[in-house]
Length: 258
Image (tube, rainbow, N blue to C red):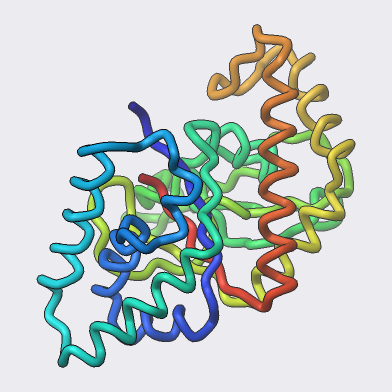
């Protein structure tokens, strides 16, 4: 099926709860499928026994969690269901293409910035492949010295924001699989929303087209399909709208791969 990227805006109060007890995150995402969840008003494509089985699994998981008491369980249930009145935003399997066009880096580069400027005067430098702490030995400096190698974004300079809107944030919880959940606080959500708006649809398309004509192009994007730019732009607009809506509500953001 592939790895899917998602964003889920949450209230600052809910984020504080997750910081105190990150084990609630797993139950939170399961609560999306409780019988009374808003999710089912949209998920008309799931019916019959499949619908009932999913709801029952969610209910069982919720009840099996080690709650302090029944009151805490019911209060948390109501809070979770309220949070799920706003759906998550799925980026499908296009999250890595989008991440590249928004930041100029691939998903293997651990970025130190949330919002930066794609400007010759302010070009972020990221440690080369620093997810594995890769360093190059320099014999001129002796056995104890190393030179840290850096890379810069490969996008052409356009003086528009570089926005780490998909893989940014601070890790939280112990999710297994494709990495932990990450979060942005409300002020960071606002920064991202403003930067995405400044980039603009036209700026996003221009970035794509500049990369498209290069002789050496990143392999993560299928440049052979003419409609690729169209659906990536649709995703860009959805991401921008989602961040703006979250910012207007003063919400935080969860970012994750699943």
